[in-house]
Image (cartoon, rainbow, N blue to C red; front, side, top):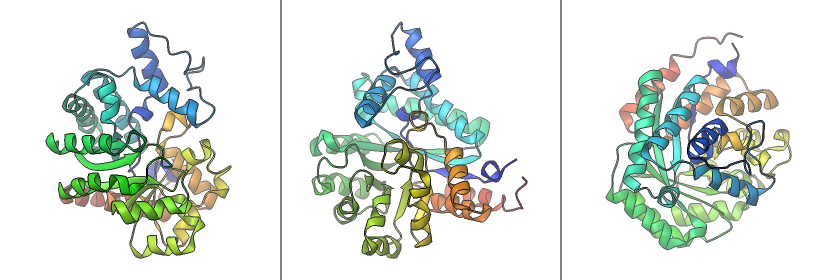
Length: 334
């Protein structure tokens, strides 16, 4: 058994609709007599060639999930997959906008996802939480509507609020009110920045949204002063190397700044983002980064510890997860 399997893992950055296995999408589409061949090839892989076609494939795949039972199955499937790779904790981004497009109420959407998370936990002991996201290119009014819905319909597994979508659309200042509302409600906050946007997008997210976690954030490496700020303020980056390579932010993993950021003292975690679209899994993220940069078992354990310490969960759960992590410190087999 390899180190990458024996290391307990934790994930903070995965879009649940983007985690839908092609086989599950095809099964639900066939059940309804719908054709998804435009976004699924004969080998069961998603078809896309650039960011625009990726978004199209993502939306088509998401459209087959329409009932609480569909979302329960999706969440259960993904969390079981995580657990099979050694994950003990996972956070998923949930999109109330996708639920609305499917004709589902926010409450029904969340209850369906929660049922799936709980079923996976019963059999595998994996812990799961949800982060509701607003989509920045839908505008500030839409993002504020999402946070009001989250606050008005509290659920114990919805513990965070985030901002996703095209980070080049809409300045973070436009969403400051929504993030103040989230923080006042006791939700953890995170925002996508420093992926397609440069270091300025990271600085703006820190200044206007007051987040302690950033989705991606890797373009901060282009500004030495910003890297120092990330270290000084203990900002945690939700790094998604496979996603960055697939979408062309970097051409090859060996050129990705994840290792350099870590060496500079930035707190980093590893994540899969939209795994089947990018041909990755959380386990592959750990193993590929470890192989490319020569990380040790202890290095990987440190990444998982960082994720658990930054997780949007209650303290008793965090303590239990840290105990489980510590229990794996015996020498790995391989």
